Image (cartoon, rainbow, N blue to C red):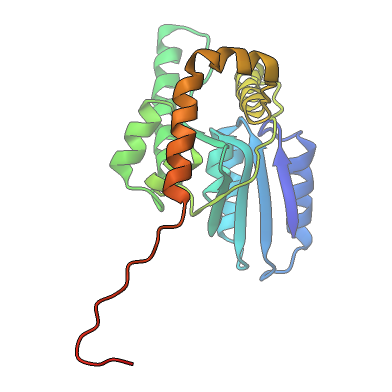
Length: 236
């Protein structure tokens, strides 16, 4: 089975609904290739999808085609093999939320977040040691494909261009990521038009040095007269 999850990790995302529907009818040992391009969303949904992948008996391959951030990176951890395009990103961070209420209620929210943080940490530690993951979570770390491979989050880098990411929940972050792709694309496609007459005029003060260099190169390339080897003992 081949599928793609894109957009926010929320229950009403059609790509996630389609994935869950396909998982109901897939053979137990059928291989899965899942592409992911998401800025994240619901942490529990991410953990649920990760565990669905981990419990599948067939080989599961995840390919990050743009970004796998937050809950999307958790989903990726369910794969047997994880690949990232060379210019994609992975981001991990501690769970966060919005909250209102009195002091007692807000303290409970903080306690709940710490508990959820333990589940988030456990989602990565079958690949990367706990101390490293904890540090990266605390710093809300964005990782390039090469850095993610260095840490052990992924297995392979695929040299293909990344794609833009869609997000309603993290629109500003998605826009920032897409802008970085556009900037990179512009650099790759940069063309420089050179005016021949302008170039000749610019080089005119250095013409004598250029002529000398040409002469030297020509002399070095001219074949040299071979020197007769001195023979010892026998004449033919």
